[in-house]
Length: 339
Ligand code: KG4
Ligand code: ZN
Image (tube, rainbow, N blue to C red; front, side, top):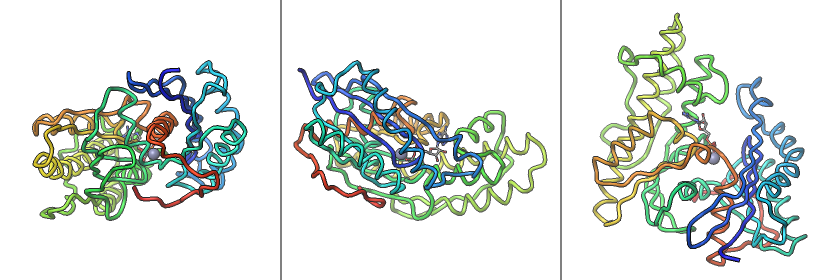
């Protein structure tokens, strides 16, 4: 048949996900995308508990995968490969999806593709629109905050990264200090909608530095302290708005620096933002305005593919398979795995 059809599995954090994607000359087509979120299992603890996550992945992975195959309307014989996240992430969870993927590949005689979770986020915008390489990427999730030059699958270089917390981690920790529960990003965005942050002065990190690195720990400390002074719901909404704007501003400042360098070396100017934090509407809008100002086209994945999902893993797997970049069946899970 036309193109490559790949099953993707994602179990690196608190989502058990499976998806079938077909990659052809026409682009990427998501045939199914099933996500079982464990948010309810972890909410009482204010964050993801690795042991609970791993156990839940064990319980869910088979059912979630069967559903993804059924919703795609495909028999296993229609697949060209099985892709699974092999890291970075919580190693207990990664091992569940990777082992299941190995077993499925062995049983069906299919190639196995071990996928770096970050590479999945990096290609996720291609799930929603035709996206030609190369592009400048801001990857903002719960575990990562990086600017990357993406030339193709398996061909990326890092321009900057966070020296302390990731952007999503800053959202989550500040939200926790404000009593907003887990995950904090979406809750903080909702609260910010009725706030006006102008009354709060928050620190700006790494001002004057010439690189593209990020830092959120000063903001986290200052905002957590201010959270203790909030008395009314309006106070809290105002603080949420101030925090969201401060994070958006830092992301924009560092992206602007990267855009200027990138524009000197590239005719084709495309800026992509991906990862869970890319679901934030204020951040999307701020970055889109910035891209337009600097002559870049702008792209963000559809909302459903910003936060963790398996469609992005299936697509990265298909792109790797197309290039012959398959994995040995004894490939190991990697809790740390920089791009
Ligand atoms: O990509 P992702 O699902 O998982 C990781 O690979 O880390 O990102 C999750 C992160 C969490 O920190 C969450 O709070 C944040 O993305 N997030 C948001 C929003 N939705 C998710 N942050 C701000 N605004 C949102 N709407
Ligand atoms: Zn992620």
